[in-house]
Image (cartoon, rainbow over all chains, first blue to last red; front, side):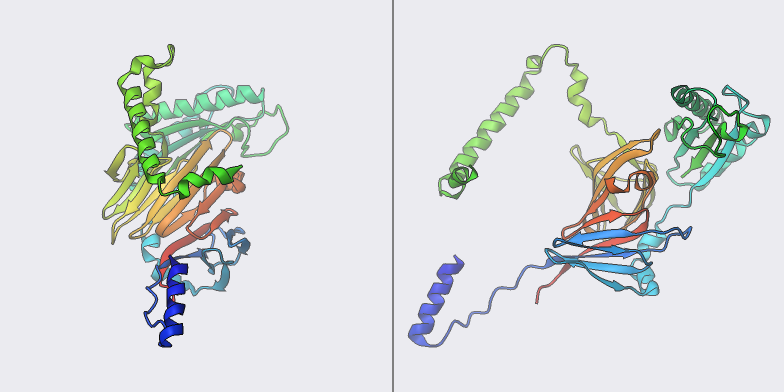
Length: 207
Length: 182
């Protein structure tokens, strides 16, 4: 098509010497992508890698911005923090409330809560009202006594036990997820086969 | 190898072939649907229906204005507390916005007139292992990465019409806009 039109144009140009004056049709809009790195709330190191047109750029400083077009390498500059907050205001306004965590402790070996932890349940139930579309994540942990597999099972049983207690408090069962992490995430690091009450716990997260 | 295969696509007769092929495929599909007894013995009837049971990948938190999920089963409005599955697209209206939390704790915030595909989501809450692929089709997305981003950052990827974004445990914004060419 294009080749034929060009041939026609050059033919016209040769014969009439008037040239080909039809303006080219407007080009379709092309996508443009911007990535802005935001500061991490806890101040930990952070970063994103943006890849386009066979090149990549890593953003590590807050408010660094990478702009890219199809098949072109990303171009990095520094965005103005205030301008970012204004331009993307809806993204800041719609942020869900920060998750809240509670830690409940167990008596050794089994799934029975300590008295103090048992007494915390009504407060947790009351706090769920602050979370639209609330999810209640119940994550069980063990100390390092016993085998890894056995502790996976025990940690899950502890989480399920707390899940049942929360359902008894009137919380919807379909919003509560019980998970066992075994001895992977110790609160207090110890050697193997150590009886440590602070590791026998369930962490509850409302989000 | 591939060169001779391309030939029919270029020939003017190709559209005829294509429509014929579509017709044949369509007939085959209709046949398969009308004869469920033909499925191998032992395969439970619920296995065929499995894709319709959406598996929760994310939960909707705050909703401002009209927001939709579009998936293989069609479209539905999203409200606070609703679930979104992998393979669904989340769409926001002209002045709308929405926030969602994925099962690994990743937080997604979509601005007005946006479309984001949840292309892939796998998460094992015992090991915190998994993978997450999002595609920002248009508009704005802010993402705060969750547990997969901590355990396996190389398995978290955001694609856009021009680029691919990888994360190193983080909070960031992606904007896909259209630009008029000079």
